[in-house]
Image 1 (cartoon, rainbow, N blue to C red):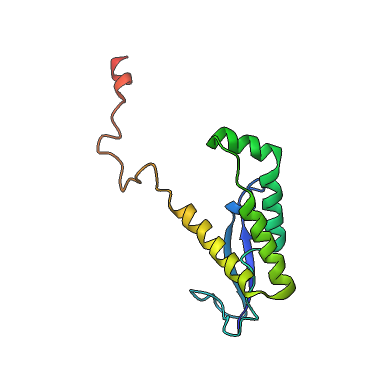
Image 2 (cartoon, rainbow, N blue to C red):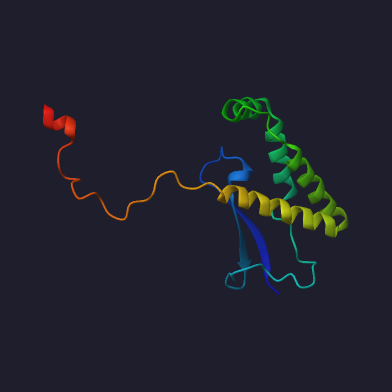
Length: 142
């Protein structure tokens, strides 16, 4: 059996929990690709602690977030999913409900899919342009 714990990593403390990298840290064994051992179902843990869902829901309902989201997207932020996830997380902690576990897993998968659907705006270069060392056009005129 592998003892695993959830690791939240972030570079900036001002970043909301939804922008954090979520990964598994194992104790006593090397990290394995895939999921930790969950054959018996008792070792399953929510992808985030319930406090993280509560903090996201609270942030989503704040006036600052409302104004920012409305300015950027032109619509009110949808906070219902964070509230559902918080309720599912608490349901899992209290009763180990299979429906709560399934709901949290589907919600996190949807978040990952939504984050991955955005493509890069700029194509990364493999090498610099051939004339990178030449002066720029405006510098030639001067």
